[in-house]
Image 1 (cartoon, one colour):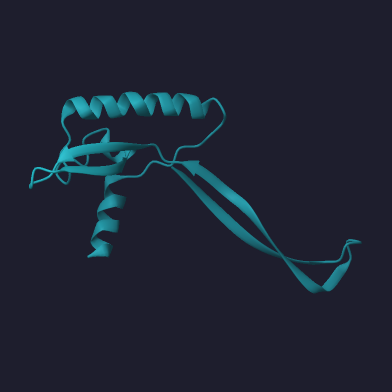
Image 2 (image 1 turned 90 degrees about the vertical axis):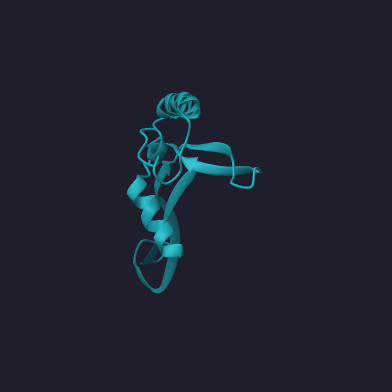
Length: 112
């Protein structure tokens, strides 16, 4: 997943570089970060499969275990997948945005 921050700038210059009464708005990308996510499938209380996408940073160290339990084997597979993603993206200068368990808890509380 990619998080992109856009910034809108208003410029008031003419083509010749002189100040102008006509303003131009330009939108530019000001920040780009990737968020490693993992598709987690588990059985719900009704026995049916539940498909979720979880941010790796919040789940890889067990921070979210009390909120959403994840078997150790699944967490190990998630970490392996995340390591491959991180290695590939870091070779190209990509920056990771680490989503915290606290951040997820705050967003869940806001939805209620």
